[in-house]
Length: 374
Image (cartoon, rainbow, N blue to C red; front, side, top):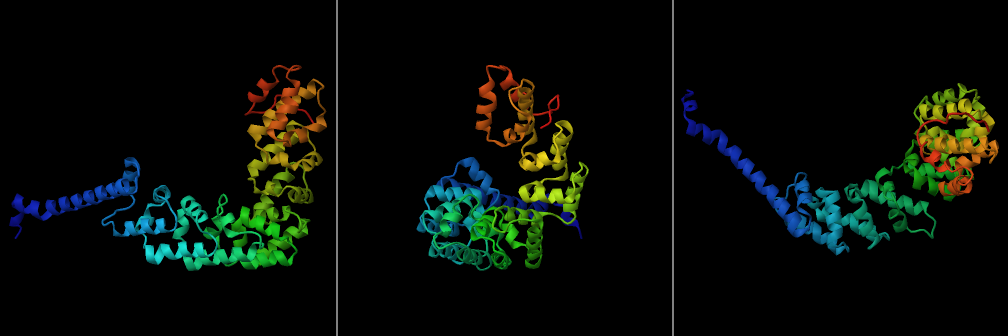
């Protein structure tokens, strides 16, 4: 019954030949893909090899149609190469049913060449989004949100401007209406969309609760800080507020003081508990600052600890010891831009303290050796 097992020729025919044929076919397809990418699209050979591991071009009919479609909308060969390098699978997309309707929709809604070319070349994944469920509703939302003198193309071409298309949800418009009903300016709503569009996708009922809470804390609905407060609470996991407030309590703060600090500098509550503890310990225990000092300059808690706070404090301590500045000026000195700090606190005292610049650059990491209070 199993006599054929002793026949090597038969075994080779049954098993090895199909495997060799499959391997040969796969190799031929990979070679054809690389040839197409290099000869037709002009990709460098190493890039073409890498892309050939992601897609397989068995026939050039569809890729040719995709390339021609992009060209008809003003894309140059360089643009097309960029797109394919970022999202190779677009070469195999259906140009008639999938790509053309999306490109045409953008074009019909004020996003045409060169804006369209820039948007797609920068973020080709946008063409993978559903036309009906993502692209059309998000553009309609923008039209409703934007003032008449703003155009959609300018927003979508801005840095990360296509995030709305990726993050759009049908919760956005109800949440915008909630903000409007509470007197939040259109400019602030637009700012929230530009910075944190996912916040507008929050559950509508929960969003109303968050907005009510930040207003009760003392945020001014006309001020820009309100949207940062809304974002901070929307992004915070359950229980995290209390956990972060507990860190402040360990340094003698009451919750009302923490809330007042949050209203002045909402981004503080974006920080992790450890990231809050580190500067609090430094300023209050090492430098002897009081809660009132930090409340006056809350930004010091969110500045880069190693790159700004420590090296600047080392310089400022030295200047204070030499009687060249007052302790109460430390807070302001920590918050000014780098070029201003260099001019006022480094260059100005270079003759009196030649080692000042070295002290600054040698202390990008670590704590000052001595403590100075405000």
